[in-house]
Amino acid sequence: MDKFTCILPCINPFFTRQALRSILSQTYEPIKVIVSDNSSAGDVVNDPEMERIVSSANNVTIFHSFSWAGGDRKRHMLGLLAQVDTRYWRMLYEDDLLSPLSTQYLVKFSEKHKLAACCHGRYSFDHQSLVFQTPAALDLLPSNEAVLQFEKIAELLFLHCFNFFGEPPFSIYRSDTLPLLRNTSSLSGYSFRYLGDIIGPLLISQHFGSFGFLSARLGYFRRHPAQDSGLSSPVRLSGLVEWELISRYLNGICNFPFNLVQRNKERLKQIYGKGEKQFPFLMERYRRVVVSDKAYVLNDEFLTFFQHCRSMQGLTT
Image (tube, rainbow, N blue to C red; front, side, top):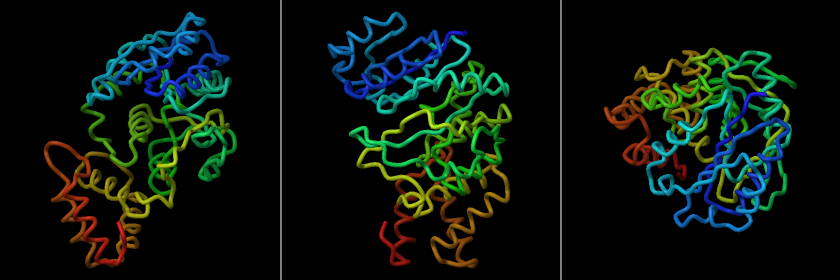
């Protein structure tokens, strides 16, 4: 088999030990593991149990780099990607876990359909490692496998809150995706503040034509008490995702399907309850507030405007 790279950025030794063991238990071999300790004091590098795990494996490189926590995350991420020299690679977050078959199944799926990237389903579990739910949106896809184009992925992400599609911990990528993901100028067009992990599937599916999905739940996503996601989350209820999509479409940043944009506009009308006459005013005001030459992200000025819109409807922010 081709050698496979797994990147593991981490801060917490307790979570990292579990994540690293799940990587080393993969049935797909050989795997090259890069552990980046991003804690301020090298908590992972200096953890005695981590030392024992690393010393017992011959395929793990671990180093301490505070640049992630220090603020320059984009440069640090590009540095990690520069170390990938294998046909396939993936990135696991320290608080998530993989089943032993995860990499093997994804590589086989990718080879079968000649995919540049693909992902699989996952369970959710809490900070005490107790499984408590599976995403209901899985029912929107075929029971086994699917090869999805950009338009379908955009629909799943923005209309059905399928925001866990293509999550990095449960995806693999071919090495020819690296130039695309390293190109920070191409990433800027998909810079979503509230759904950050969707950048990969959108960018890759538009560039390579598709992104694969296996419905098998071969991973475990750890949801912490402070996390709130899904259709009932404040971000979804307030329409922030719809604002981001429409703003990028109107300013020519992303080529989202026209019908998807229209359906998001309809959803915003329902959220704000302003009707057809008031909506153009809101849209124009939003464009003046958000769009600048520096960044296409929601800024504090817009959030103030958003709170004003909500308060006019008697809604809390």
